[in-house]
Image 1 (cartoon, rainbow, N blue to C red):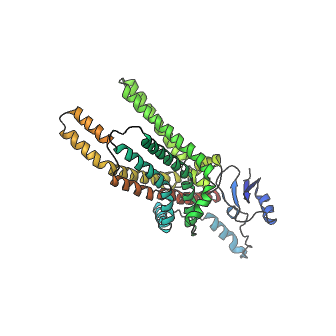
Image 2 (cartoon, one colour):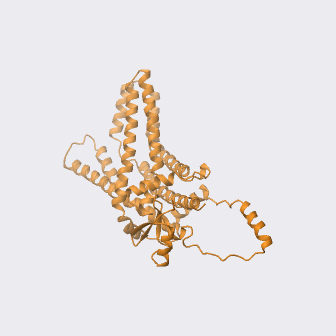
Image 3 (cartoon, rainbow, N blue to C red):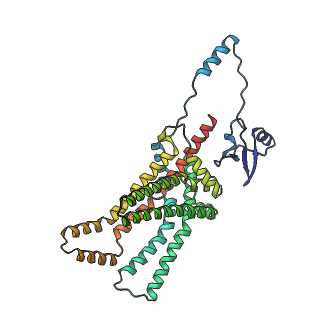
Length: 381
Protein backbone atom coordinates (compact mmCIF):
# COMPACT_ATOMS: atom_id res chain seq x y z
CA UNK A 1 0.00 0.00 0.00
CA UNK A 2 1.53 3.37 -1.00
CA UNK A 3 2.25 5.92 1.68
CA UNK A 4 -0.48 8.50 2.24
CA UNK A 5 -0.04 11.87 3.88
CA UNK A 6 -2.02 14.62 5.55
CA UNK A 7 -1.03 18.19 4.69
CA UNK A 8 -1.60 21.17 7.01
CA UNK A 9 -2.35 24.44 5.20
CA UNK A 10 -3.23 27.54 7.24
CA UNK A 11 -4.18 25.45 10.26
CA UNK A 12 -6.40 22.95 8.36
CA UNK A 13 -5.51 19.35 7.52
CA UNK A 14 -6.11 17.95 4.02
CA UNK A 15 -5.81 14.33 2.94
CA UNK A 16 -4.98 11.54 3.00
CA UNK A 17 -3.15 11.94 -0.31
CA UNK A 18 -0.62 9.68 -2.01
CA UNK A 19 2.58 10.88 -3.65
CA UNK A 20 0.98 11.44 -7.09
CA UNK A 21 -1.78 13.59 -5.62
CA UNK A 22 0.78 15.57 -3.62
CA UNK A 23 2.68 16.21 -6.84
CA UNK A 24 -0.53 17.52 -8.45
CA UNK A 25 -1.10 19.80 -5.46
CA UNK A 26 2.50 20.98 -5.73
CA UNK A 27 2.07 21.87 -9.41
CA UNK A 28 -1.11 23.78 -8.53
CA UNK A 29 0.74 25.69 -5.80
CA UNK A 30 -1.39 24.22 -3.03
CA UNK A 31 1.55 22.48 -1.31
CA UNK A 32 4.79 24.30 -0.49
CA UNK A 33 8.03 22.81 0.88
CA UNK A 34 7.34 24.47 4.25
CA UNK A 35 3.86 22.96 4.76
CA UNK A 36 3.66 20.51 7.73
CA UNK A 37 2.81 16.94 6.70
CA UNK A 38 2.46 13.61 8.46
CA UNK A 39 1.80 10.06 7.36
CA UNK A 40 -1.81 8.91 7.63
CA UNK A 41 -0.88 6.24 10.19
CA UNK A 42 1.57 8.35 12.20
CA UNK A 43 1.62 11.42 14.43
CA UNK A 44 5.07 12.85 13.66
CA UNK A 45 4.84 16.07 11.63
CA UNK A 46 7.60 16.99 9.20
CA UNK A 47 7.79 19.46 6.31
CA UNK A 48 6.66 18.61 2.79
CA UNK A 49 10.22 19.21 1.58
CA UNK A 50 11.26 16.04 3.44
CA UNK A 51 8.88 13.69 1.57
CA UNK A 52 11.10 11.58 -0.69
CA UNK A 53 10.43 12.29 -4.37
CA UNK A 54 8.15 15.30 -3.91
CA UNK A 55 10.42 18.35 -3.99
CA UNK A 56 13.70 16.64 -4.77
CA UNK A 57 15.48 18.07 -7.77
CA UNK A 58 15.77 15.66 -10.68
CA UNK A 59 19.22 15.58 -12.25
CA UNK A 60 19.66 14.67 -15.94
CA UNK A 61 21.46 11.41 -16.66
CA UNK A 62 25.21 11.72 -17.06
CA UNK A 63 26.70 10.61 -20.43
CA UNK A 64 29.09 7.68 -19.86
CA UNK A 65 30.98 5.30 -22.10
CA UNK A 66 29.05 2.08 -22.77
CA UNK A 67 32.12 0.01 -21.97
CA UNK A 68 32.33 1.52 -18.47
CA UNK A 69 28.67 1.97 -17.57
CA UNK A 70 27.85 -1.59 -16.51
CA UNK A 71 30.99 -2.21 -14.39
CA UNK A 72 30.60 1.17 -12.67
CA UNK A 73 26.92 0.52 -11.99
CA UNK A 74 27.74 -2.90 -10.55
CA UNK A 75 30.50 -1.44 -8.39
CA UNK A 76 28.17 1.26 -7.08
CA UNK A 77 25.49 -1.30 -6.31
CA UNK A 78 27.96 -3.34 -4.28
CA UNK A 79 29.08 -0.33 -2.21
CA UNK A 80 27.23 -0.06 1.11
CA UNK A 81 25.29 3.11 1.84
CA UNK A 82 27.17 5.67 3.87
CA UNK A 83 26.13 5.47 7.53
CA UNK A 84 24.10 8.38 8.85
CA UNK A 85 25.92 10.24 11.61
CA UNK A 86 24.01 10.45 14.89
CA UNK A 87 24.62 13.10 17.48
CA UNK A 88 26.20 11.87 20.66
CA UNK A 89 24.51 12.36 24.02
CA UNK A 90 27.38 14.63 25.01
CA UNK A 91 26.69 16.83 22.00
CA UNK A 92 23.00 17.01 22.94
CA UNK A 93 23.78 17.96 26.53
CA UNK A 94 26.28 20.55 25.31
CA UNK A 95 23.56 22.16 23.20
CA UNK A 96 21.24 22.11 26.22
CA UNK A 97 23.77 24.14 28.18
CA UNK A 98 24.29 26.55 25.29
CA UNK A 99 20.54 27.14 24.91
CA UNK A 100 20.12 27.69 28.66
CA UNK A 101 22.96 30.23 28.68
CA UNK A 102 21.64 32.01 25.59
CA UNK A 103 18.14 32.32 27.04
CA UNK A 104 19.07 32.49 30.72
CA UNK A 105 16.87 35.46 31.65
CA UNK A 106 13.71 34.28 29.82
CA UNK A 107 14.13 30.79 31.30
CA UNK A 108 14.66 32.14 34.82
CA UNK A 109 11.62 34.41 34.38
CA UNK A 110 9.58 31.36 33.39
CA UNK A 111 10.84 29.48 36.46
CA UNK A 112 9.88 32.41 38.68
CA UNK A 113 6.41 32.25 37.19
CA UNK A 114 5.77 29.07 39.17
CA UNK A 115 8.31 29.63 41.97
CA UNK A 116 6.89 32.85 43.43
CA UNK A 117 3.35 31.56 44.19
CA UNK A 118 4.85 28.39 45.67
CA UNK A 119 7.28 30.31 47.88
CA UNK A 120 4.53 32.66 49.06
CA UNK A 121 2.44 29.66 50.08
CA UNK A 122 5.38 28.01 51.85
CA UNK A 123 6.26 31.19 53.76
CA UNK A 124 2.67 31.60 54.90
CA UNK A 125 2.41 27.97 56.00
CA UNK A 126 5.77 28.20 57.78
CA UNK A 127 4.65 31.32 59.64
CA UNK A 128 1.50 29.57 60.86
CA UNK A 129 3.47 26.47 61.95
CA UNK A 130 5.96 28.50 63.98
CA UNK A 131 3.23 30.24 65.95
CA UNK A 132 3.04 28.40 69.30
CA UNK A 133 -0.34 26.79 70.09
CA UNK A 134 -2.05 28.65 67.31
CA UNK A 135 -5.83 28.77 67.54
CA UNK A 136 -8.18 28.70 64.60
CA UNK A 137 -8.99 32.39 64.22
CA UNK A 138 -9.48 34.82 61.33
CA UNK A 139 -5.73 35.25 60.84
CA UNK A 140 -5.01 31.54 60.46
CA UNK A 141 -8.04 31.08 58.19
CA UNK A 142 -6.86 33.88 55.91
CA UNK A 143 -3.34 32.42 55.88
CA UNK A 144 -4.72 29.00 55.00
CA UNK A 145 -6.88 30.39 52.21
CA UNK A 146 -3.92 32.38 50.88
CA UNK A 147 -1.71 29.27 50.83
CA UNK A 148 -4.46 27.34 49.06
CA UNK A 149 -4.90 30.10 46.46
CA UNK A 150 -1.15 30.17 45.80
CA UNK A 151 -1.18 26.41 45.26
CA UNK A 152 -4.11 26.76 42.84
CA UNK A 153 -2.30 29.59 41.01
CA UNK A 154 0.77 27.36 40.62
CA UNK A 155 -1.38 24.64 39.06
CA UNK A 156 -2.92 27.15 36.65
CA UNK A 157 0.47 28.53 35.60
CA UNK A 158 2.13 25.13 35.21
CA UNK A 159 0.76 24.33 31.68
CA UNK A 160 1.85 27.80 30.50
CA UNK A 161 5.32 27.16 31.91
CA UNK A 162 5.55 23.79 30.10
CA UNK A 163 4.41 25.21 26.75
CA UNK A 164 6.69 28.26 26.99
CA UNK A 165 9.73 26.06 27.70
CA UNK A 166 9.04 24.12 24.48
CA UNK A 167 8.56 27.28 22.42
CA UNK A 168 11.62 29.10 23.75
CA UNK A 169 13.89 26.09 23.35
CA UNK A 170 12.76 25.42 19.78
CA UNK A 171 13.38 29.06 18.85
CA UNK A 172 16.85 29.17 20.40
CA UNK A 173 17.72 25.79 18.85
CA UNK A 174 16.83 27.22 15.43
CA UNK A 175 19.09 30.22 16.03
CA UNK A 176 16.25 32.66 16.64
CA UNK A 177 15.64 34.76 19.75
CA UNK A 178 12.26 35.11 21.40
CA UNK A 179 11.36 37.35 24.31
CA UNK A 180 9.72 36.26 27.55
CA UNK A 181 6.37 37.94 26.89
CA UNK A 182 6.27 36.75 23.28
CA UNK A 183 6.78 33.17 24.50
CA UNK A 184 4.02 33.61 27.09
CA UNK A 185 1.67 34.98 24.44
CA UNK A 186 2.22 31.88 22.30
CA UNK A 187 2.07 29.50 25.26
CA UNK A 188 -1.32 30.68 26.53
CA UNK A 189 -3.16 29.24 23.54
CA UNK A 190 -1.83 25.76 24.40
CA UNK A 191 -3.17 25.94 27.97
CA UNK A 192 -6.33 23.78 27.50
CA UNK A 193 -4.46 21.00 25.69
CA UNK A 194 -1.41 20.95 27.96
CA UNK A 195 -3.63 21.26 31.04
CA UNK A 196 -5.68 18.22 29.99
CA UNK A 197 -2.51 16.25 29.31
CA UNK A 198 -1.07 17.28 32.69
CA UNK A 199 -4.20 16.00 34.45
CA UNK A 200 -3.95 12.70 32.62
CA UNK A 201 -0.18 12.13 32.85
CA UNK A 202 0.37 13.30 36.43
CA UNK A 203 -2.90 11.69 37.50
CA UNK A 204 -1.78 8.28 36.24
CA UNK A 205 1.63 8.66 37.90
CA UNK A 206 -0.18 9.58 41.15
CA UNK A 207 -2.37 6.47 40.94
CA UNK A 208 0.67 4.28 40.30
CA UNK A 209 2.38 5.81 43.35
CA UNK A 210 -0.71 5.17 45.49
CA UNK A 211 -0.67 1.60 44.23
CA UNK A 212 2.91 1.28 45.50
CA UNK A 213 1.93 2.64 48.93
CA UNK A 214 -0.88 0.08 49.15
CA UNK A 215 1.66 -2.64 48.39
CA UNK A 216 3.81 -1.42 51.29
CA UNK A 217 0.76 -1.47 53.56
CA UNK A 218 -0.01 -5.05 52.53
CA UNK A 219 3.59 -6.09 53.16
CA UNK A 220 3.60 -4.41 56.58
CA UNK A 221 0.27 -5.89 57.66
CA UNK A 222 0.98 -9.47 56.56
CA UNK A 223 3.29 -11.85 58.37
CA UNK A 224 2.84 -15.03 56.35
CA UNK A 225 5.09 -16.10 53.49
CA UNK A 226 2.16 -15.88 51.08
CA UNK A 227 1.50 -12.21 51.90
CA UNK A 228 5.18 -11.35 51.42
CA UNK A 229 5.34 -13.14 48.05
CA UNK A 230 2.05 -11.54 47.01
CA UNK A 231 3.37 -8.06 47.92
CA UNK A 232 6.58 -8.66 45.99
CA UNK A 233 4.56 -9.73 42.95
CA UNK A 234 2.48 -6.56 43.16
CA UNK A 235 5.66 -4.52 43.53
CA UNK A 236 7.06 -6.02 40.30
CA UNK A 237 3.77 -5.20 38.59
CA UNK A 238 3.92 -1.62 39.88
CA UNK A 239 7.48 -1.16 38.59
CA UNK A 240 6.47 -2.57 35.20
CA UNK A 241 3.45 -0.23 35.02
CA UNK A 242 5.56 2.79 35.95
CA UNK A 243 8.24 1.93 33.38
CA UNK A 244 5.70 1.31 30.59
CA UNK A 245 3.92 4.57 31.22
CA UNK A 246 7.18 6.51 31.52
CA UNK A 247 8.30 5.20 28.11
CA UNK A 248 5.01 6.13 26.47
CA UNK A 249 5.01 9.65 27.95
CA UNK A 250 8.58 10.73 27.14
CA UNK A 251 7.65 13.26 24.46
CA UNK A 252 4.02 14.22 25.10
CA UNK A 253 4.90 17.86 25.85
CA UNK A 254 6.83 18.29 22.62
CA UNK A 255 4.14 16.76 20.41
CA UNK A 256 1.40 18.82 22.10
CA UNK A 257 3.22 22.15 21.61
CA UNK A 258 5.87 21.91 18.91
CA UNK A 259 3.84 19.69 16.56
CA UNK A 260 0.55 21.37 17.60
CA UNK A 261 -1.45 18.11 17.73
CA UNK A 262 -4.33 17.13 19.98
CA UNK A 263 -4.34 15.13 23.19
CA UNK A 264 -4.67 11.65 21.70
CA UNK A 265 -2.26 12.35 18.81
CA UNK A 266 0.28 13.67 21.34
CA UNK A 267 0.06 10.48 23.38
CA UNK A 268 0.29 8.26 20.30
CA UNK A 269 3.19 10.25 18.81
CA UNK A 270 5.06 10.15 22.12
CA UNK A 271 4.75 6.36 22.28
CA UNK A 272 5.85 5.89 18.64
CA UNK A 273 8.87 8.17 18.93
CA UNK A 274 9.97 6.76 22.30
CA UNK A 275 9.97 3.23 20.87
CA UNK A 276 11.61 4.20 17.57
CA UNK A 277 15.23 3.63 16.55
CA UNK A 278 15.17 -0.17 16.65
CA UNK A 279 18.00 -0.26 14.10
CA UNK A 280 20.17 2.08 16.15
CA UNK A 281 22.57 1.01 18.92
CA UNK A 282 20.71 0.92 22.22
CA UNK A 283 22.55 3.97 23.60
CA UNK A 284 21.37 6.08 20.62
CA UNK A 285 17.68 5.21 20.93
CA UNK A 286 15.30 7.91 22.21
CA UNK A 287 14.11 5.65 25.03
CA UNK A 288 17.50 5.12 26.65
CA UNK A 289 18.64 8.69 26.09
CA UNK A 290 15.44 10.01 27.66
CA UNK A 291 15.78 7.63 30.61
CA UNK A 292 19.40 8.73 31.16
CA UNK A 293 18.52 12.42 31.02
CA UNK A 294 15.64 11.90 33.47
CA UNK A 295 17.91 9.87 35.78
CA UNK A 296 20.50 12.65 35.86
CA UNK A 297 17.82 15.14 36.82
CA UNK A 298 16.29 12.87 39.49
CA UNK A 299 19.75 12.32 41.01
CA UNK A 300 20.20 16.10 41.19
CA UNK A 301 16.78 16.50 42.87
CA UNK A 302 17.58 13.77 45.41
CA UNK A 303 20.91 15.43 46.17
CA UNK A 304 19.14 18.75 46.82
CA UNK A 305 16.54 17.03 49.02
CA UNK A 306 19.27 15.26 51.02
CA UNK A 307 21.14 18.55 51.48
CA UNK A 308 17.92 20.20 52.70
CA UNK A 309 17.20 17.51 55.29
CA UNK A 310 20.77 16.77 56.34
CA UNK A 311 20.87 19.15 59.37
CA UNK A 312 17.70 17.58 60.79
CA UNK A 313 18.82 14.03 59.94
CA UNK A 314 22.15 14.66 61.65
CA UNK A 315 20.42 15.82 64.82
CA UNK A 316 18.02 12.88 64.75
CA UNK A 317 20.84 10.38 64.36
CA UNK A 318 22.83 12.01 67.16
CA UNK A 319 19.81 11.96 69.49
CA UNK A 320 19.07 8.36 68.54
CA UNK A 321 22.58 7.26 69.45
CA UNK A 322 22.75 9.10 72.78
CA UNK A 323 19.10 8.76 73.86
CA UNK A 324 18.39 6.82 77.05
CA UNK A 325 14.60 7.09 76.99
CA UNK A 326 12.96 6.20 73.63
CA UNK A 327 9.65 7.81 74.65
CA UNK A 328 11.37 11.09 75.46
CA UNK A 329 13.15 10.95 72.11
CA UNK A 330 9.84 10.52 70.27
CA UNK A 331 8.33 13.46 72.17
CA UNK A 332 11.34 15.61 71.33
CA UNK A 333 11.13 14.73 67.63
CA UNK A 334 7.39 15.48 67.56
CA UNK A 335 7.92 18.86 69.24
CA UNK A 336 10.71 19.71 66.80
CA UNK A 337 8.45 18.80 63.88
CA UNK A 338 5.65 21.04 65.16
CA UNK A 339 7.93 24.06 65.68
CA UNK A 340 9.89 23.51 62.48
CA UNK A 341 9.60 26.78 60.62
CA UNK A 342 11.25 28.38 57.64
CA UNK A 343 14.80 27.19 56.96
CA UNK A 344 16.65 29.80 54.85
CA UNK A 345 19.23 27.26 53.65
CA UNK A 346 16.58 24.76 52.59
CA UNK A 347 14.61 27.52 50.90
CA UNK A 348 17.71 28.64 48.97
CA UNK A 349 18.40 25.07 47.82
CA UNK A 350 14.80 24.67 46.71
CA UNK A 351 15.02 27.95 44.79
CA UNK A 352 18.23 26.79 43.08
CA UNK A 353 16.58 23.55 42.01
CA UNK A 354 13.61 25.39 40.49
CA UNK A 355 15.86 27.83 38.64
CA UNK A 356 17.72 24.92 37.04
CA UNK A 357 14.49 23.03 36.32
CA UNK A 358 14.14 24.43 32.75
CA UNK A 359 17.24 22.41 31.88
CA UNK A 360 15.13 19.24 31.98
CA UNK A 361 12.57 20.67 29.58
CA UNK A 362 15.29 22.01 27.28
CA UNK A 363 17.01 18.61 27.23
CA UNK A 364 13.85 16.79 26.15
CA UNK A 365 13.12 19.34 23.43
CA UNK A 366 16.63 18.94 22.00
CA UNK A 367 16.34 15.15 22.27
CA UNK A 368 12.92 15.30 20.58
CA UNK A 369 14.26 17.31 17.65
CA UNK A 370 17.27 15.03 17.28
CA UNK A 371 15.23 11.81 17.60
CA UNK A 372 12.61 12.97 15.13
CA UNK A 373 15.34 13.72 12.62
CA UNK A 374 16.75 10.22 13.17
CA UNK A 375 13.29 8.76 12.61
CA UNK A 376 12.98 10.58 9.29
CA UNK A 377 16.38 9.25 8.25
CA UNK A 378 15.22 5.71 8.95
CA UNK A 379 12.09 6.23 6.84
CA UNK A 380 14.21 7.44 3.91
CA UNK A 381 16.53 4.46 4.27
